[in-house]
Length: 198
Image (cartoon, rainbow, N blue to C red; front, side):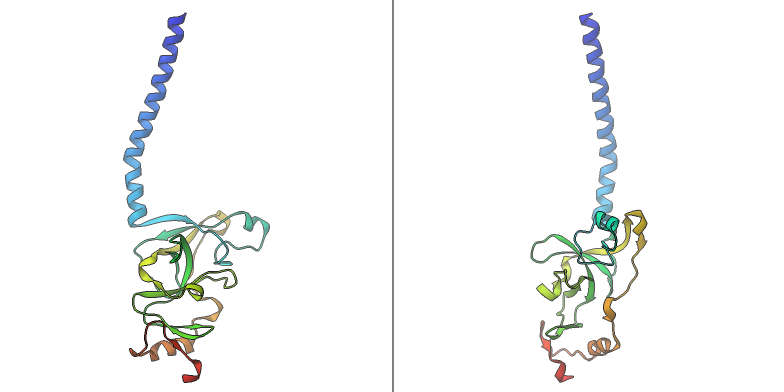
């Protein structure tokens, strides 16, 4: 009887070891391609906070407040003004999601006037200006901090959709486009242009 219970224990240990070996083989084969895809191509990211409300993490209903948006992020995408991007916060190095408002050598309208975005930098803002800490707070961001383009919401399923290229609050106006054309090379990086000079 001692021998049979010892034999049964040995068999259960061997089955467990075999299961772990199988799992290790699957991980050995499956994990490297997943890491490659994440590092080189795309991945899913959970959006924190309400700085991109109502585009991401809407707060209209109680059920919306319970679920955060998971988005599909594409690395190495060509970024354009109006795109929603994933980037590193210049102060904390944490990942944040914002809208790309301007790229290098463009002019942005700010409460203090118009600001020239220097070469190698970009200007990002959250769609919810009241709750967003963005370029209005910390200024232009080095373009090297941009991690990727947010393509779509993949979870929760009832909010799953492709994100359209839109500018919020009518920011992409004809006057701003004219102002960007008028920018000359004599502006220094971070220079503020008074509206009276126009």
